[in-house]
Length: 426
Ligand SMILES: [Ca+2]
Image (cartoon, rainbow, N blue to C red):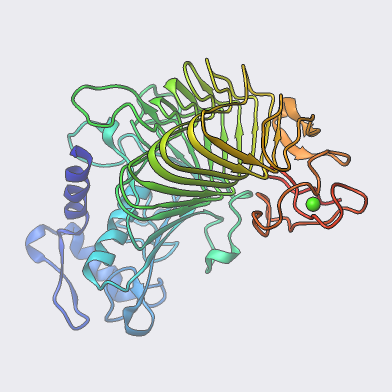
């Protein structure tokens, strides 16, 4: 695939000026020009205080150089950044991902690299240098590389960041006022993970010369089993899968919102073909498809929805979900147009489905969202969905991290979990 060739070209661009000489020596290649000599000089002068460590390659430190973190901050003023600390942060994500990928592929099969991205908006179109088609610029997930957003830009651990406070946006546009957009903001052709981002602005439009150009404006998954958690996909477009397309691959998504994505054909938010995809504690809201599956289109494979709330999606058929085979539990499908679930083989249980759906524990009732017009889909006290889920299927916490809570007098005695992405905590 063209994007793969360009990605490896980019790694060479970043790291070609340096050479690993073994036994802890990371030296500059003098033949490559004076600019990188100052990079190497900085690394030797302030490597320790800057997050690096004497004798380790850039981004590696700790015992045996076994810890790898690559920093990204759009406000970084480092003249020749190597991503070794917040002060030395790269200014864009693809550059940092290339460095992390290089480290994992070079320094051992057990090495895991984390990429820490500070709050702000990162434009992806044009972020990868070179003369290629910038519509193909993308953030390529990779095995053993963990991509984290939501940092203020001073943290020293992943646990201390807060993505809800420090929104970190991966935007497929060239800049704020540009009509130029990438085909896929994120691409996965193997395992990988991302957590704590807003993904927006991708537009997967058909181009006969570019394979998969019409699938997954926000994210295209073609192989492996990547993991997405605590993200928002919004205002992405595609012919097949406005936000995400998964074809012959797996995807595990949790605590994630898909809002106002659009497809000109199938799958306003997600297009899943021969995939193994699980959505847990997710919201699907106000997505549109002109033909099938306002939020989700699926065909073959295994698709599982656990504690999902679907509202305000629309399509020609299957306002929330179209396709087969589907398994849904502890979920809410309400206010989608013209219908909720259009599927010949769906197992739906312990769920609230407008218009009703055959299956154990199902309801047909207004879920009483807090403010549906504003897409605030938390449950109000008195909601029929409270304490009506199947506890064995529910995750321990809801999309906001609230624990499962037994509300006295609500639901079925002995049951704790609510239906939908949100747990009512009185
Ligand atoms: Ca409950």
